[in-house]
Image (cartoon, rainbow, N blue to C red; front, side, top):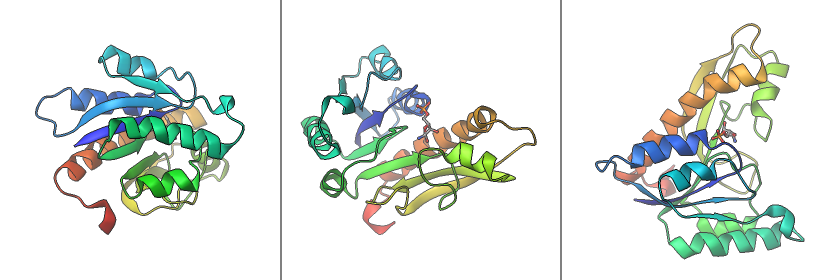
Amino acid sequence: LSLVVLISGGGSNLRALLDAASDAEFPARILAVGADRDAEGLAHAEEFGIPTFTVPYTSFGSRDEWGEALLEQIRVWDADVVVLSGLMRLLPASVVSALSPNLINTHPAYLPEFPGAHAVRDAIAAGATESGASIIVVDNGVDTGSIIVQERVPVAPGDTEHSLHERIKPVERRLLVQTVLDIANGLDLRTI
Ligand code: GRF
């Protein structure tokens, strides 16, 4: 199974995929890593000698123009699946429909709880006693796609956004690697 992974930040989830895929037995390989900005996480891909590309959102006049440029870069690799792993931008509908259903996303909450870009902060603000991690198939909504797998993560008293996120991320990483494995072993994203 071939992947393109898209990030915006530190890429700890990407790192988990890179580590897993570096095992010759792992049935998936990462062809390239892309970002919407000069993301720190691109360094992880460079460490593994994997090509990277950057399509800076701020270089384009509109989300649609950015999306088309991003799609053009993604298509170069002709990957089986595109993985959004901490991409902090909504993809235009044209990009989602071009890639669907082979487009998955990891989200640090137990969807449909706490969708959107501030899921961990929102869980803390809501006084939630548990949150979670979810891997979904991307659709045109904000984190509204079909849930492939998800798992509860407890919120500890006194948790901050950071401490809760740090507890969620290892779960996200495990679910993301497992999902890639499942897809490589036949999970059909059209049936989710
Ligand atoms: C992850 O929790 C992801 O779900 C969210 O942002 C975080 C990215 O972390 N969208 P990293 O860049 O993988 O470390």
